[in-house]
Image 1 (cartoon, helix red, strand yellow):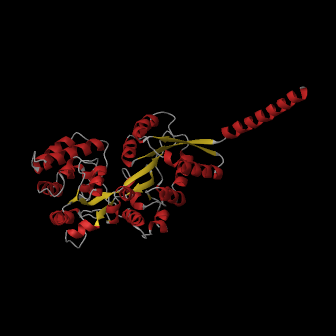
Image 2 (tube, rainbow, N blue to C red):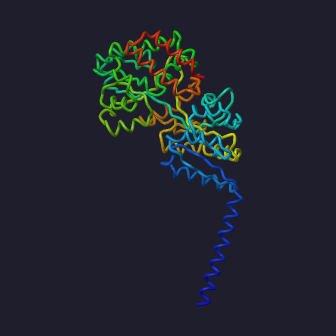
Length: 405
């Protein structure tokens, strides 16, 4: 019995000693707290990258916290005002710009981002300074029904909104379907379209060029060449219209191709893809997710180092192959993965990647961007429903925007 007790005591001493060593070892590490948005489905990927980084940097421990999209901005705003915020935070550029405006973000050395697509870096600049590092991007493509388009008797595919507007009547009479359903009042849809007409400042929202854009959609709406639901529907509802064969062209992410294939296989068989519709300026709109480092972060250097590791070509490509996102790292974008067009999915991916090279000039984001988007959407409804003339509606919009920074 005494031998057993002695043995147990010896084991306890050994385990205690090992635990103490482990604690001392962990305590000597620098802990970098990283917040991401809604990446829980890719936890295996994230932990793999983290383990690989920690192996190469044994003095650093990465504490990963995944935050729901709905809570991201609120939690981030509260955190950056404290003395102990996360060291690296995943955000969208609009909110990042707001935090930069408040002086709560660390400026990023431009030389540190030389591996990234220069157009995206330029678009992320705020007051000629960089406060964020791009992680991944999405860029909508145009999905269209070949059969319905052929029935319209038109040979040349439209490349711009104006070209689409010109053939909208012939498409409807020939195919029985609407040319497309622009979700003009959803989020910043109208702002992105206006951006393609060279409108990058709030003052330009009431300009001759802006009037042309609003009047173009008003004419289409009055002639029943775009569905009445244009002023209320979302892109998901527009996708349902496409799958039902009620519209010929649909603009959205390449990920929607899989939804069409699963839910409307006969429509998918008649589907092909082209670049997103452009305006006279010729640029494309994109969406980017980035990382920022709070000014009060304790581990700024280590946070930047891990961020550049997570967003290097190899890790971005691996994430891209698991999802439908587009890499922002230039080396990754030149990989054969983005140059393969053997099937429609890969063709869509290739088109999306190429579109990142033509995204400037971008609409300048404001602190009150959501309110601005809502005001523009209200103006769209006012004009299309003939409640006011385009000129009067845009004059009212100008007055409303005078209250915004």
